[in-house]
View: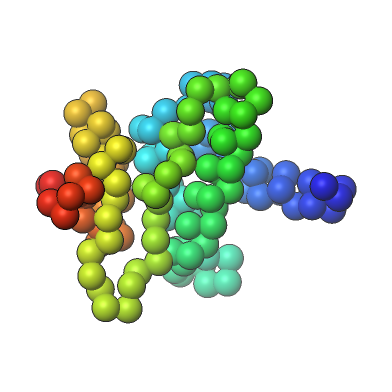
Length: 138
């Protein structure tokens, strides 16, 4: 990795990960933390037009960066698992407005802990919360 790439990643982490998750030891970040982080990142103003929030694609890119960071920590033995991994991430809206799937792995587990963040993310993006068999929950 070049020094310029390393610096770009550091700046991205400083702007997107550290403000909400920087106080947490990497080993303690949970699904709930990630869901709350997604809600926070979705509400950030767009740098191009502060009257708008970040584009869904930008949120997806930031989520991917968080997921890669947590996967690297898992690979290095700094944590177990990746709560930002898998397919449970924001997707840009489809042109045909069909509901998109928010994977069962995360949403019901969050709901069972009394956390409504998964439902909020699902509603905000028009996702259907499913069990992977075509059924929809909530």
